[in-house]
Amino acid sequence: MVTYARMLKYEVPEELSLSPSPYNAAHHRFTVLVAVLAFLLILAGALVTSNNAGLAVPDWPTSFGHLFKIPPMIGGIKWEHSHRMIAEFVGLLTIVVAIWTWRVDKRRWMRWLTIGAVLGVTFQGILGGLTVLNFTPPLISTAHGVVGQTMFCVLAAIAVFTSRSWLEEPAEKMTRKDAGPLIRHSWMLIGFLYLQLILGAGFRHVWTKWGPPGSNHWPTHKIIHIFLYPHILNALLVAGLVLYLGMRTLSKHSNIPHLKVPGMWLLILLVLQLMLGIGAYVVRVVQGVDEAQPTLALVGVTVAHLGVGALILAVTVILTIQAYRHTGEPADVIPFDRSREVARA
Image (cartoon, rainbow, N blue to C red; front, side, top):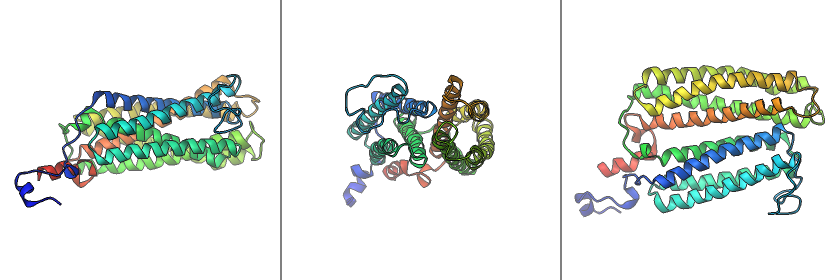
């Protein structure tokens, strides 16, 4: 309990101290590295699906009965086993991030966020194992993809929270009137992006498992009507929101670089994603129906389409975080700065 004498001396107990942790350059750079590797892990997972290599290594957690022995990296094995090795490496580095954060970061919420990241990456690994043990069921495989992109966003957010700019007081802030629409529509975009992610991942895995490349359990038109057409329609909503947020940040908040830069990248990624989406439709549905094996064009375009989608989701999350950060009274909106407000009281 805070005593009256300590209050008179303006002393605040450590648990209430709102002064942020000092900037640690090495810690921040390491979190950026882990976030980048998490993105590469998403691409590696996409390569497994696009190459129909999900069961190239038929056992888990071992690979052909071994925990550490590397199998012959041929055929689909090179994609599946490489994906596993990258996943294990990212998981190990996430544990290092958590330990390092608990040692150098005074923010309690930040410490527990890294613990959540470790638990999330562990859960992601278990989902990956279940896809193998259950012969790549589309439901679990889709969950595996959704959780993977979520963890990429979490690790990207941790990199933002450890940056120098986050630990310093924002030079420019928005009024509540300006912040409201930006925050509200950012959350709307995140919701529609997750719907887009679920529909896209569902289409990829159902098509691979039960569509023309697989055992053909579902008619092609059924897969397209259930997953692909809603995915395309939802893409129009996503595109509209991205255009709105991008143009709003460039026109109304161009004086705040931490809003302007994510908004600009959203517009650039949107153009690229629309082109890749059209290309993915052509190589997967138009040309890929009768292909016995995935072509190089199919693999390249579909993996790029998934990767750019992951970047759009992560950039939107960062934009949302920064919108809260640059709100006039952030302590009333987001809990990250409440200790600072207490310290000033």
